[in-house]
Length: 241
Image (cartoon, rainbow, N blue to C red):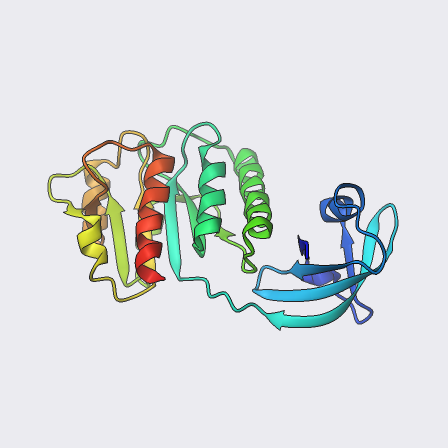
């Protein structure tokens, strides 16, 4: 069955009302009809088996035949990633969703070249959240990747105490191979920091180490931000699952 994101505020005693882009997709793209069934999912990990009651120009009304908790467990893995140039963060959001990451923090570091004013930052966050929803529809995920507001590097470090494993891949003399560190991974509460083009500054690395982060190497080659993020996440998730 087709999967569609639903806003829980649109669930009533009578059933479910879908509006906006999802209604357009049902009506004009997938071309579902009354009595057709689909799966709705919310951001909190619930699925709704629905049957379409009627479709009009602005909305789709459906009856909820069954509600169930998703059997998929999202691991407590957070990626804090320096905002890369161009549309590379779009790709990172998409792949982080597919890999089962729970949280993503767009991060501003000393060497981050992308500077966003307040209005532009809000627009970008909304855009990344939409990508997370669309990617969830595609990969069968019910709990949507949580994309936070943009945070400064120091703020991320300050709020990192709850994580049991904290990794900072970087170009640094005293890094340890990431696979060796992950072989001893005992907790799924993981925070990974990915730096900008040009890496973290020495003062940022020192701040992270003092807060309990382990400096790790992703290999002998210098990786782009998006490549580093997905490579590190893939290694972490392969150890957890």
